Image (cartoon, rainbow, N blue to C red; front, side, top):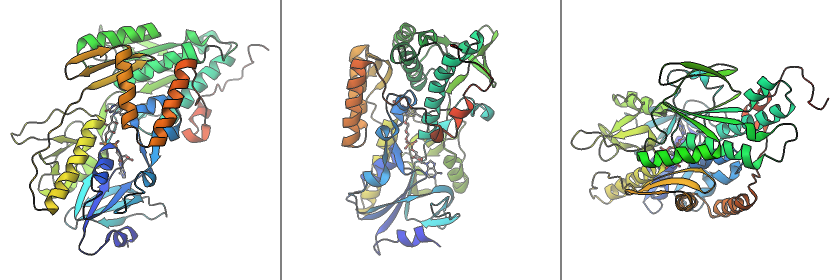
Length: 461
Ligand SMILES: Cc1cc2nc3c(=O)[nH]c(=O)nc-3n(C[C@H](O)[C@H](O)[C@H](O)COP(=O)(O)OP(=O)(O)OC[C@H]3O[C@@H](n4cnc5c(N)ncnc54)[C@H](O)[C@@H]3O)c2cc1C
């Protein structure tokens, strides 16, 4: 072939570094190789870097897609030693030092790309605990398309309630079930409640959007289990004030076309009619972890993560780094480092992999990877958040302001920061949401399928 391979040769004698995944981990690795004497090829199946921590704002109409995603070529345009290849990686030949590329933009499949050093940062996806059939009814926020799909469903549900005459059906349109009480579920539930009580309140004529029910279902006995219990309690109270019903100690046991079955701690099962279900529970590593593990003769753990050595390389393959959500780090004493699936972990791992590559070129050794924990933040709604920063617990406005500043700081691109600040300031004072568009083509037609299909007359008829 192989156009990608021949292009990857770069300058003769220079190391070829292939980085897979332009997310938080991969992008940091690429950027920290800016001054290294290497030719870098970044492969991603999408042409943009997605700032996942703000995906829930896209899903609730607070921000638009271009404000939370930036084209990878644009991010890297001033880094001449990098080229970007849009393709899906489907395999690894570790003996020949090649990756297999599929779905290239020119229609080509099965192309190969050679490397001297490989960095794999494929991320993670939500796990439906063996119920993949729930996926179409209960979309997740992991991708840009997923966030747009959710926005379409939420907004379409309010539109459907506006024209619905049957009380029971209207109640179902106005019931939103968010599955998973981690930071994403909490953010989603809080934002839907704000949307219903604040932003949409005056926009509808027949329906009172404030009657919407938002249920947040969490199996554990508290929400935000990665935070101290006192902050979980504060977050729960803040959600209740917003109008969310947190159902802790409850488990979703079935998601069918018209309802969700929820089992309480005592074992009782309630069937709740709900047209909109959002999945924010259980995370599993990208399938790339299992593909790489199979190529290296390694085993993945229950969450599908690939074990890597303390220098973040695949056992037996010092030339292959694997980082971010798709790995677990096995420390020198054989224990697993308990690292959360967060952007700072992936970013620090990406920077570390680049440092090892640079040090190797200079014949220097590098100490094992060590994660520096700078704290944990979760936002609940307008002026409401919780933060655990090195043991200092903050909640309310101060935590919310910290959350705002941290997210702005990490958002890639000056232009995006400016746009987001402008929109947030505007929304803060007007309680409005400018990006409340139902975009059917952007969501695999899902908005279409969520329109009321039965024959009905408008309430005013
Ligand atoms: C909704 C949501 C909210 C979050 N909020 C926060 C938060 O507030 N704070 C925080 O710290 N963390 C948050 N996280 C977690 C954080 O986003 C992840 O920990 C982080 O993205 C992991 O980085 P990564 O590089 O491992 O993977 P990712 O950033 O997911 O990047 C993976 C990249 O690999 C590409 N890719 C995957 N498979 C292939 C393939 N086969 N071929 C080619 N390319 C491929 C993908 O397109 C993607 O660009 C959130 C996650 C989600 C889903």
